[in-house]
Length: 600
Image (cartoon, rainbow, N blue to C red):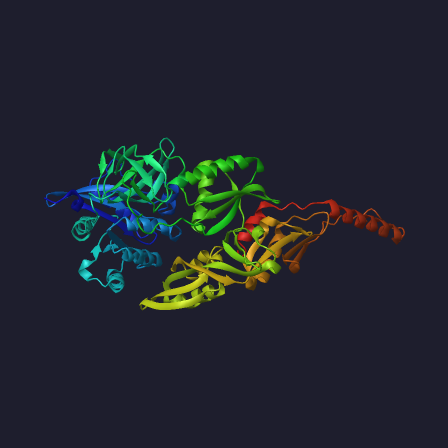
């Protein structure tokens, strides 16, 4: 008789966006009768409307299935992972909680960038990989060519690749059989001190934070006093259980199994993904390796359109942070936009999602300032300053050096588009590090490039120049010295802080000119000339002028001496000069958004 631990299989699904991961998960749940036909709906594990509409997984999920195989009842824990690069830390913790992974590749599209980067993560964690060729029912599926790609990538045999279709359910039984036969049971000492890895958490408004974990060693009992390693805080396990379609309370969670814990925690910052839960009485000696504090990579100001909504916006962001601990924010004010918040995001998709959730879930219409990344400046006195905001940037005469974050980018594209893709990356200060042909017409390009260059419009441009065929993925690659300047935009000599941005000197003149031209078209005409200037320190690098509205004051002169006309024109000139001194220029909201879309 096998022990309960030997009957557990923990696995995740690795796939690029839109390769059918969520649909395949639906079929597995349906086949193992984890869900009834009545509860069945598409993308069952994606419970946000936003996830269903965009076809992406934003929050990772976990669900337990039971399956009778050769007379023995096995427990299968599917730990679903987000697909997008912005959530790569969550992916790494979910992978660390598994012993195996299904590598799902679309039979029409082939291997993409995210498939490869998540596969490397899985191989680093010594996971058993089961290759699955999905969507084989599609009329344009090229099974043989894509199988060759998988064989080149994994070095497996052709018969090891399982053909499947999430739509028709073909091949699902083979997948489950392979999971049971090939993926090893979790290792771990059932009688050791408790060690459990937190791979996700969700906020329940009635019961507080629910943490999802995998028990690596020992047992977790209901009512037991536990300690979280990174915060050192102690709690009582008020309820523990396993994650079926609905939560099932249990008295004990064994080594190797996956479950949830509710301990009445109200503050999202107290539960960190990757942290270790241990017993308060007999704590383990060391935490599970791999824990990191999640660091925001992209910063942007979020302001309410109506300044009276400031407190409401604060409440909305605080509620969002309960569901998404990787969102950071602090209050800030701007002369042009009033009071708002400086928010830190994992990446551009994360920023988009937060903005959309604020609109949908809390009815908040907000203005985002120009996104920028976090820099470090060393002053001539030897102090290191973190710069998250253009207003933090010291004057150039006080700075010794500035460093900016770099990334390693992987781009997979058709060989027809190598030239345009390379030109785009070089224009964005990228350096080509490798070029590998995966097949005769698909190539993988690797670049080192600054993160700041991809936060604007890089992804959109990449998709348009490759006609949608290029896929993109990246990993952080430390900080490198850069030549950074602060570009200020001034209207009639007054600085507009919300339009300030930090740029590499190489791009400053070009972008300064573009912003001035864009603003000239957007700022309505006044009774006086409006000077729009781009400046680096005290040096003006670009200028445009919005000409004054001209009232024809001489229209009433019909004849008579020329001095009458001159007198009226002089009077008008004095009035305009006085108005210029006391008049203020209203900047329309569209001007702030236009800076984000300079190349439209």
